[in-house]
Length: 69
Image (tube, rainbow, N blue to C red):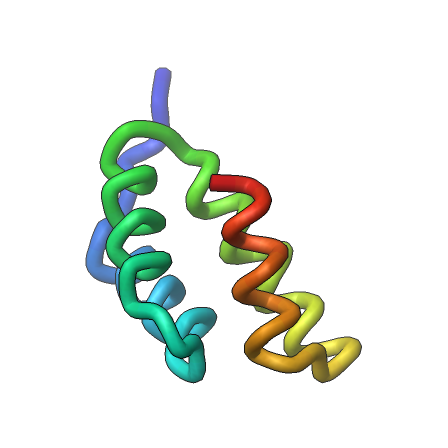
């Protein structure tokens, strides 16, 4: 049985992770991916953890996400 996805929470996570990105297209692509699979959640969780633990730059996070999309 598949768990219910809370898109509102996921959209807030995507906004939080991509807030400082120079390109808003990445946010849109993550939101689209979130509607198709759970991969967007995994990507956002990973980037959020790196931003929190290692204080990575927005450009580094953006590059990592672009390579996964």
